[in-house]
Image (cartoon, rainbow, N blue to C red):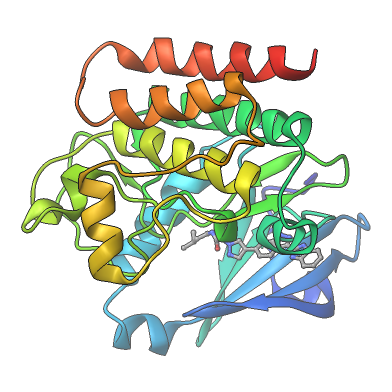
Length: 275
Ligand code: N15
């Protein structure tokens, strides 16, 4: 967003449009910067809620991390400002909204579309991992779609810089977590970027099949993840089937040197499906 760095942004610089969504700590609105006409998504966080939720430090860190990220498949944070009560995040507007809604509507994606999305996810994760950032919460709900159909990873609510601070408790669905994180005490152990690759396999399955591979009651989901127990329907092509299995079997066990292989294989195998 072109702007004068000498002059800090304020709410007055924006026209506020329709609400785009709301999360735990904030609401997001469509917004236009008055002077440039630049369209963005303005997220409003209430300081009192952040204090109450004891997430000020995390939010500060997320802002810091996200401000420095520049990738076509990672949602940009253009800037931020605050007043007495609120923090405002100037986020990239994704014209086609939330990916999980597209998936819901379509039931499942054709392989060419799943392939494009997974290739883009792979590119985004490769970029993040190179910067030693793991996302840790890869799922359709955290992915937005741009006007050209390109995907944008958003919500770094659980992301961390890999070398430090690797012990964070997590909550929410187990569906996308690898075995090392669902075993008892597992979430207290150290883990690394590979957990994102496992989630990528889960995501690929969900794109192609319409539901996550281990979807079940929480107890059964945990059991099935630990055993990597999944059935891939027969309509999934041999190439895609092979790749899902590779990603889900290699990532959590073979913990080194598989990144490159998995990334490049997911990219080329899925591209070959339709090109
Ligand atoms: C703590 C802080 C630094 C975290 C920063 N990251 C986020 O806040 C992640 N986040 C992104 N939270 C909300 C959003 C968000 C950005 C939500 C929705 C949109 C967004 N950009 N564009 C949208 C959007 N476009 C839409 C089009 C049609 C229907 C709904 C849409 N939502």
